[in-house]
Image (cartoon, rainbow, N blue to C red; front, side, top):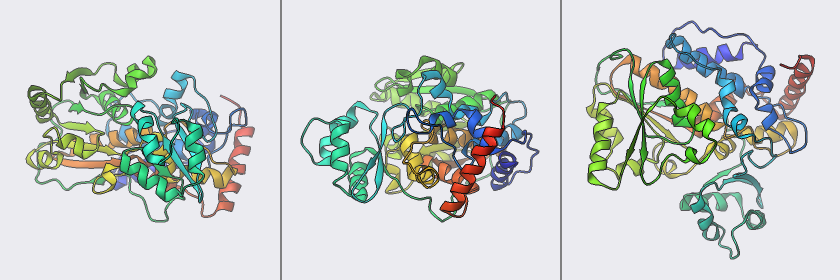
Length: 412
C-alpha cells in the first residue's frame, strides 16, 4: 500500500507541481507502529492501539513531497518526527489524557470535549469557565463537565481564551490542508541560494516548519518576545535544541517602540515569515500581515492557527492534542477501539509543521508574494479523510487487519 507516496503526490498536485517522489513502500500499519505513535496511544498499562487511518504515512508523504522539490535537503522521515518530543521527554500512553498530562477528554451531559489547560493562566480562568466555586482542579473540571452540555462548555471556553474542543465525528465535507492567497503581482523567483526565514512562532508547529526549511538551505532567524519567550524552553532541552539549533536568535521587547520597529525591519527583510499567533496579536504590534504581503514583491507569509483565519475562528485557541480531537481523530479511535483516547502526543503540531514547510518552500520557489494559512484542525482532518473507511464497521475491520499485519511483521 503506497499511501505515503500517493499522499505526497496528492499534496504536490494540489500545488500544481509535478515531481518524482522517492519513498519506500511500507504498509501504514507498520509505519504507525514504528513511528512510536502506537506506543503513545491506548489505556495506561493496556495494549498499544492501532489507528485505522494512516496518519503516520501522511507525515512521511508530506516530508517526501518537500524532499522532491528540495532535493538538496537532509530530512528525517515525517513519521519519526511525530513522536520526537515524547521520545525525548519519556512520556507514554495515558488513555483519555494526553501523554504530557495537560489535555483531558471529558464526558459532558451529551458527549465529550477536550480541555487543554497547559498554561498557568488557564487555571485562573477555570472558575469563570465552569461558573463553579471551589479550587480549580481536574476533579472539579470533570465533575462539572458531566453536568453541562458540550456546546456550552466549548462556547464559553473559547470566549475566555481556553483551548477547549468538541469531540466530534470527522465532517463529511472535503478538507483542504491550506488556503493560498492570490499573489498581487509577479515578483522575484527564489532569490539566492535559500530564503531568509523570520520565525515568529513558538512551541512545535512553527519551529518545526522553520527547522525543516533550515535543512533545505534556508537562513532562519528565530524571534522571541523578551516578555514571553518560546514556551518550549520550559520543556525538554533536547527537544528545544532539536528544533532550534543553528538558527539565529533575536529577543525583542515588543512593549517598546524601538522593539516594534526592529520587528517590522526583520519582517521587511524576510522571504518567508512564519507566525503562529492569533492575527489580532500582531495587529496590536502594528503588523498587518495582509497589507505587508500585498505591498511586497517576494514575501511568503505562513499563518498557523488552531482553526483558520477569519471571524470568529481566528480567535479560538488550540494546541496539538485538542486540535486533533476537534478534527475527529479521537472519534475515529472510539469507533475503532471502543474507547475515548488521545492519539499520540500533540499530533496536530508536527503534522502542521511539515505541511507548512512544504507550502513555504514551494511558494518561495514560485516567487511573488502570498499568504498561506494552515490550521491545526484542517491539516489533521485532511490527513484523516485521505484514506478514511466508509463506515464504523469498516474502521473496525481495518483495525483488526492492520493489527494482524503488525503481529506477523517482525519488530524493528
